[in-house]
Image (cartoon, rainbow, N blue to C red):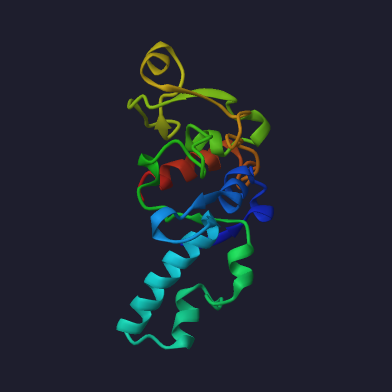
Length: 180
């Protein structure tokens, strides 16, 4: 996976900032209150350190595994980033973006201002033209859950890549993405 900085993609930062600022009590497992990002870092660092040690992976190779960045560098943990998922099977994982705020890939290829502001997630009728699941209409409303992108952490702004493509090029891109 690739780390994508929020300022580069222009996305809604609330989900990442909420996570970075979340606090939790360690209860019987420890003492005090820790932030979710620190707790996650401790767990993942422990797992990664054990894996690297068992596999005898050198410090130099660990940097390669971390995308060319030193995994011990504390500045990495302070960045607001989302992990970009692989595109394999992208046609089958709607709705899109880190928070599911865009119902179809065709909607993702529209400028953010033109994307649906309210739609229904959870209806399992696949839309092969727009590449996603049907998210409007009586059956989508009956079986789905309403999403309003103006709700907290629901924003679908940013991600303007490909929005200026010609319609025929968007169609070709969608057909290609269906093959992955």
